[in-house]
Length: 425
Ligand code: GDP
Ligand code: IMO
Ligand code: MG
Image (cartoon, rainbow, N blue to C red; front, side):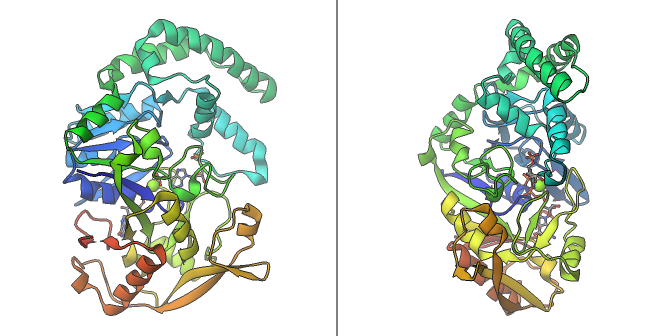
């Protein structure tokens, strides 16, 4: 069985969770491998909506779920999610959390928020969940890990050392109150640890055992290719590597197992937070897409910026992830548009290119070169097979596939679980 990675090819919120939910019905295990509760992954089942931030969305299909070592874990959010799923009748007893995952500590969201305030007009628009500061501590080798919850002495000793530094930073640089060591110890060791202990395990062994046993394992990417700390629009990015390759390092599975890599793209593009966005629409068309597509953050409710599909970014996403397939979601949102544009190149300083410039300022100056497609002006929400799609919608999808260089195998025509067209690869 191939291990399959589901990865966002734009700036997030492409509908990854919906695709995961679909594929999970045939999978044995779903693994999160990077990011944290900055993710908002929505699955709509009948009249019920589930918003996941940490637990893999495969939980709804009843698969085994794993939070891998590459994730930064907010215990409170996770416990709330466990309670939410349990109270709605789902079994989370097979959830496993890597002991090597790093903990989000109370100073992380505080520092995230303070850093954003200090940036003023140059704020990045982070989710203020402490994701960046948690990865900073991890890389600085000052992080506390999930396994420390099970080793109280180590937890206390590490907290003592790290918190002394953090309190200096909080009080002397930022001029805010120091955090209370005893209160943090009590919260993590007396409250979180006993409730999470049964889920903490050697997930490297668990995921590799599953793959070796021929089980079907899905890797659920969070964020997306252009929010990648290395390959995205730095500094307007997240602090992890959402590209598909991280499914390997972020879970402890060798890269040769990752054979099927499904890129998820909206039929248009959205972005939350600051940063360049060449195809952004500032007009009624953009507002119409926002309204029809409910393009407001799953957690933050922030309005998402909307724009046309960008074939240049897509081609770069193909390379960065070695996509084998493309899932196009939310095509139904374009139903009422008489004309739909697709960006096929950029004009930068008078020169035409079909490649993404490495330099952010150049990217910010990119003027999109568009081709125009005639809209289908038909309600696609009831389509379940390719044959149900009008020729103009098929032409549009064929063009997205052509620009991406891989076949379109999944098409989303609505938020509902059944509102999907699957095309055998
Ligand atoms: P993720 O972060 O990539 O999992 O995506 P989000 O859940 O943040 O955002 C995608 C939103 O679009 C959610 O509200 C989904 O319910 C919804 N959605 C997903 N696929 C489709 C689709 O094909 N059509 C429509 N209309 N909505 C969709
Ligand atoms: P999913 O998994 C969309 C964005 C934030 C901000 C930048 C940095 O639902 O697709 P961070 O808090 O990570 O330091 O913020 O990244 N961002 C997302 N945008 N979808 C997400 O996740 C995102 N996770 C982070 O808006 O611009
Ligand atoms: Mg999301």
